[in-house]
Length: 209
Image (cartoon, rainbow, N blue to C red):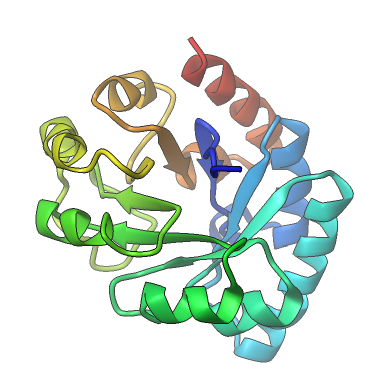
């Protein structure tokens, strides 16, 4: 069965939310999330592994899928559903060999040349961004804007496109209209930890209109 990415793709951030990854996942799933990316830039590998194990158990208990950001080794060790790679991470071809044909593998791209190349690799989706200015990534690439997203969509037709970067309830519909198959969010969902479930529900309703 071909991979179908959900319209809303939440990404965890323990520093931003003040919550464990498992608790974020519980709240996101309560709001309707079915595919979640675990993103952790602060912890040492051993602590990251422990958090990831609990996060995966939480996701599996609610029939949701969990993607690990960057760390192919941890995704393999815990049996996660896949991995999301950056431009300087493990090559997608190598990740596919390690994780197998059933793994979900995504790759971040930041311009039309990277996106065009990514569309030829063994990936299930490519992320495009940042669409707008974002505060959740150190040293972000220049914002592409809606026009940049549309240009990439025009040359990438054979793979789902996930837009990321500065997306929120106010601009999500425009991003989807510009050609994104899915929108990935961090701050737009996690900034207020008590509202994560409500924001996830609201974003799903908006995305499905």
